[in-house]
Image 1 (spheres, rainbow, N blue to C red):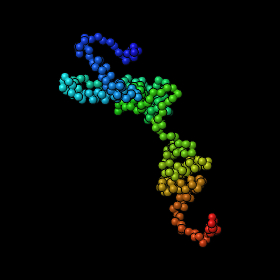
Image 2: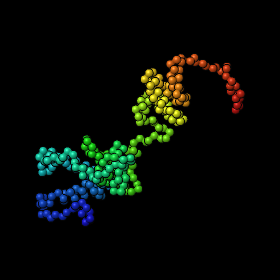
Image 3: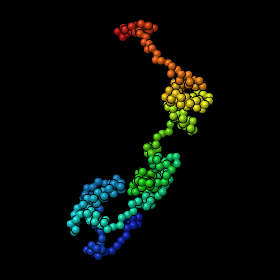
Image 4: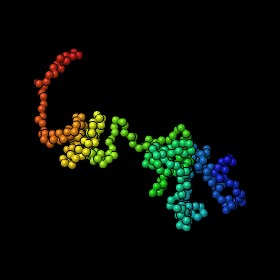
Length: 288
């Protein structure tokens, strides 16, 4: 009991019997806690699963009693509080960052922080940034202070070393696998080539897969053709070249020429009379 009192800053003060001014509210606080908050056989309250749940019960009790008229003033305490706020000095709009806990820096690659030996993840948008961590009741609260002020970004149950708390949504989209790589431009020429369309990306992936030679020269030539014929015909020709595995220097020009000159072919249908399939009449009596 002494250790608990020291932890919560409990002090003993003497008072005059039956004197409300010297007794203060300590006696009433204990009576309220015993009668209305702490589970007993008399009030039939259920047990609290966490200290945070007990705090919510305290807040609910305060909201309930502060809206009832006081026996002496005949006025609800919440209305008297509104009058007192007109004369009280307001607190700063932004609290001191020390109130949010201890500063921690989010990892540059993996969005996690370390606190009291445990590892906790935060949204990947805060990679490399500084956050503030504290333990509030039975939870770990992580706060980020940005231009729009402080806001909570994650809340976890405490953990120990070797049992990290990770949320898969905090790590963002998964990186592309080795079989699904999206080409990314590093130079102005590469950006101009990929801007032609999706067919350009297909052509680049297919050409690199077969080890085609002089890819950069062919990309520059495709950009020049797109300026002459337009990006749509060139993009279509590049997609066709990727599908047919045609990566020679003259292939793209020939495909463009074919697209411009070739007309629609005649639709041919082959009926059953010209089919070499013997048919299924031999199976007609199967199973009889």
